[in-house]
Length: 100
Image (tube, rainbow, N blue to C red; front, side):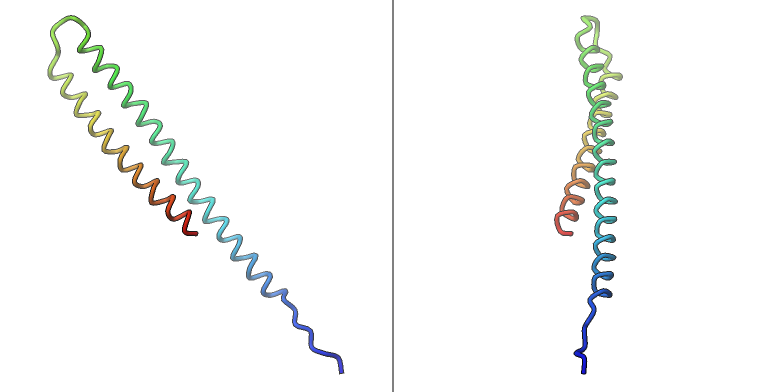
C-alpha cells in the first residue's frame, strides 16, 4: 500500500495570499506617510514664507503695521498646530507600520 502524501499546496497558497495582503497594507500605509510628509513640507514652506513676510514688516524702518503683524503671527501659530497634528499622525502611522 502506498503511503499517504500530504500536499502543502493549499497552505502555500494561503500564506502567499496573507503575504500579499500584508504587502498591500504596507504600501497603503507608506503612501499615507508620504502624503503626510508632502503636506508637512508644504506647511513648512508656507510657515517660512510667513516668517519672512513678518520680518520684512518689522524691518521696514517705517511704522509697524500691528494688524498685519498680528494676523501673520496668528496664522503661523495655526500652521504650527497643523504641523503638530501631522507629526502625531506620522508617529501613529509609524507605530502601525512597526507593529505589522
